[in-house]
Image (cartoon, rainbow, N blue to C red):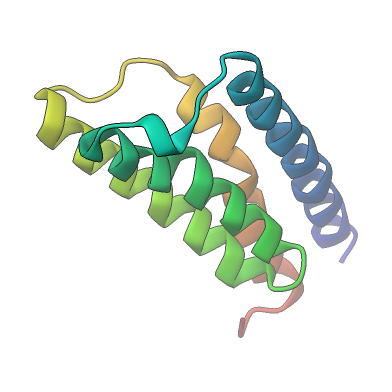
Amino acid sequence: MKAGIFVRNLAKYSSFLSIAILILVFWEKGIMPWRMEYDQLVLFMFFPFGVIAGMFMSMKWEGLGGLLTLTCLFLFYVFSQQQNGIYPQQSSYIIFSSPGIFFVLSALLNDPIF
C-alpha cells in the first residue's frame, strides 16, 4: 500500500507543477483561444485544455481523470498528425501529460476496481 500512496502523491504534485507551468507558458506567450483558427482551436481543446481538465478531475476521481488526460493527449497527437501530416516532435507534450499515467497507476494500485 505504501507504493500506492507514493504514486498518488507523485501524481498530485506533478499535476500541480504541470498545470502551473502550462498556464504560465500560455499566459506568457499571450495565447488567446478566441483568436485562433478552427484547426488550432481543435488542437487547443485537447492540449492543454483537455489535459488540464483531466488533471483537475483526477483530484477527485483518479482513474477517470487520468484516462481523460491520456485520451486528450492521444487525440491531440491524432488530430495534429491529420492536420500537419506529421506527429509533434516535442516530448514536452508527453512530459506535461505524464501525471495522467501516474493517476491511472495510482487508481490501479489503490482501488483496482476504479
